[in-house]
Length: 367
Image (cartoon, rainbow, N blue to C red; front, top):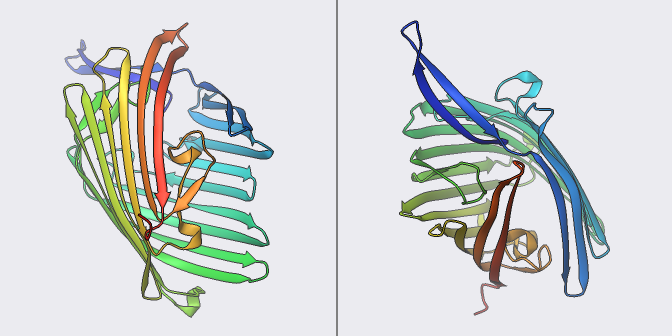
């Protein structure tokens, strides 16, 4: 549960000659006040709202956020119930976003792999997005179901496969109307070694963080055959491979991720993207953590709606949401995270961060 700050487990002998396992949990403060003010390039942006991560002590979470960037107003709502209908590990979630030129709604119900010894997982959901790019409007609706099974259960590694079905309908209205309807058959795998460490002051303040350093390999493929009975208008194959690994030495932590994906449409290879991401944490000082991050993405044959973007939401603070676009992207970040006071009044952790962001997006034919 996200509101548990840390947990301690111990064993004690009882009078019957057995052993009692004692679990002590410590809760976090769960009411979050969302507030922000920014002025960049003569444009003022404000953001406000509330988020609660343990409603009525039931483990449910929700948020409502209002933001204004110049004259553009955005509103978002979300809700998550991790024990839907009081069923353990059955998770229900919903979200709604209304932003300039964009509306998005989603709802999902799933039971994930809650532990390495879990034997199966399943879920499903629906979503709808509408994007207005004058003079056209594009609406995309999706519905999916997924099922996963563990080939073997172990506390040392995971070996899983997953199967799914996804149907997508994208319709463009305007001067040049267009309709794209696809039904994907999905197959994925999860091969991961389990080598967890428990640390603090990486992404959170005083909360325990469990980070897996083990090698993980995650291949997947989605295939939409052109079958008239399924209503598909073209054939697509979307293969992808992701790899992750972590390293730790003394007070340093390094996390590496790499991935490559593509989309083959009617036999033609397009929308190919290769990515590399590295994050390095240095915790030598008691009340400070240095964080270094770099990311590189290389794209080939990207369509107009699949361009790589860089801006406020993906690492380049102080700029617009998608200030720069292209098919090559580089990002570099440095942060000095300073922890001023822990558990103030037993409800607050106080800190500050000094950061430097640098990034660039360019075309494949440009230097």
